[in-house]
Image (cartoon, rainbow, N blue to C red):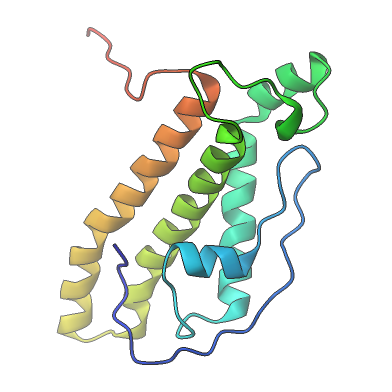
Length: 156
């Protein structure tokens, strides 16, 4: 589900992949656009910015998991053995999902700043739910990578 209303603009500028830290894959802005059905109304510069910020957030969250894998002798995520119940390439796919979802949540939250009228304010309130859904998807993908349950329940 895309949270943006298309204005009919279909031209998109192809940008170079956003370079990652060597352990995680580089992120291709065109692939992000295709996966999340984002058209040319969102500029290439904005796409690159949100992807870089999302990568920083996800990489920071997964830094301990990454350190354990590197310490175990796996130089890249592709070298990490996949549990027998998972499909090959699952860590790479989950990482991309976490980055793409985090980036899309950021775009959704900022989208309302195009319209400052009452309708814009109402629209920003309606976009809060999709943004949280994208953040949830990112958190679940990170939990899957780390081998944790999707939620934590504590007694108070």
